[in-house]
Length: 178
View 1 (cartoon, helix red, strand yellow):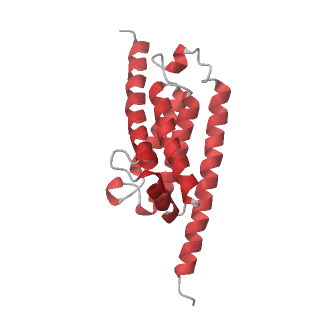
View 2 (cartoon, rainbow, N blue to C red; view 1 turned 180 degrees about the vertical axis):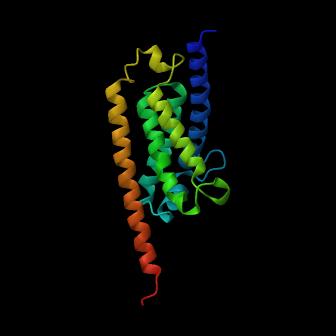
View 3 (spheres, rainbow, N blue to C red; view 1 turned 60 degrees about the vertical axis):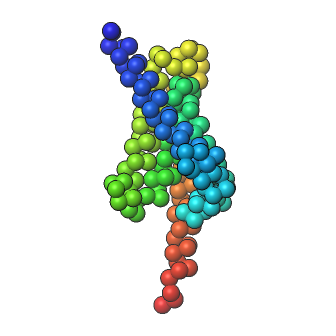
C-alpha cells in the first residue's frame, strides 16, 4: 500500500476515535446521554465553575465538543471543526489547571490532549477518506484555517478571561476582611 494511503487511513482512524470521544462528551452535556447530566444540570455546573451565564456556556461547550467532534469524524470543515473542539477543550483546561497536569490528580492532561489532537487534525487536514476530500475541500481552504483558529483563540481567551475574573471575584468575597 502506498505511504499516502497509510497516512490517510491513520488520519481516518484518528478522526473517528477523537470525534467519537468528543461527540460522547458533548452529548453528555447537551442531552444527558452516556451518563451525562443534560443541558440544565450542565448549565448549573458551568455556572459553579465560573462560566457565567451557565446555560449559554453549557450549550457552547456541548456544541463545541459534539459538533466539532462530529465534523472531525466526518472530515468535514476540518479546520473549523478542529478549532472549535480545541477552543472547547481550552475552556476545560482552564478549570483543571489548579490541580496540575496529570488527570489522576484532577489535572488538565486529558482535555489538553483532546484539544491538542483536534487542533493538529484541523491543521494537518482530514486526509483522502473524508467529506472534505469528496467535496473538493470547499470548506477546507487555507483562509478557513486561519479564520477558524484565530476566531477560536479569541473566543477561548475571552471566555477564559471572563471565567477567571468571576472566580477571582468569588474568592475575594469569601475572604474574611482583614
